[in-house]
Length: 68
Image (tube, rainbow, N blue to C red):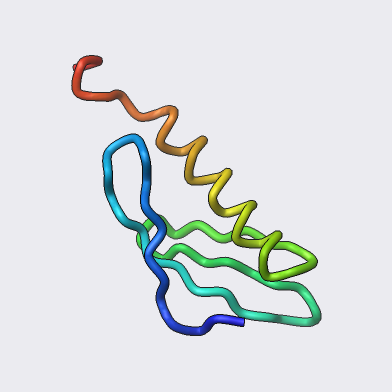
């Protein structure tokens, strides 16, 4: 379990997001304070994978440089 910030690179705009993983009541929670986002999982790896998916969806909805 990680309680220190870890950088997660965003592929769309090459930005890095910091997150921490904590365990609360037997559930792992990956928290990205940069975007006030958190995802849960039965394992630390599952929580991180869920956070990566949520970040991908978040950035997918943002307009890119060509979109204006």
